[in-house]
Length: 153
Image (cartoon, rainbow, N blue to C red; front, side):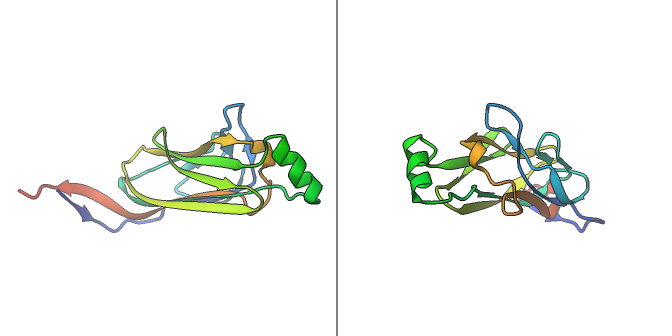
């Protein structure tokens, strides 16, 4: 099976920064939306919904609040706050994990997605450590749409 490609008027993609913890499960949203072409990102829920079937690129970067000194680092490690982790969740399944101990970390995926599929950041471990700054962000964009499946037979 192969896919056919088409060009599309417009563009679908977003970039959102800042962090808001939604609930105790570690789901977060990014309320400071830099751009939201196609209006596919919901800043209240933190969910990006693919408007078209196609190839998408998505990325999550997490940055943690800096420690003031070495004692703060040791105290936080002793308290169990040594790692901050968030999942990149595609269609309800965690496909990628972003970890950081003392700085910033990022991960990106490029996947074929169907119209209506969702992407979010969640299951965060120690989300209180996430820095509410421009370095913590979530983004996704449509690279190329697939307009129909073509059978090889």
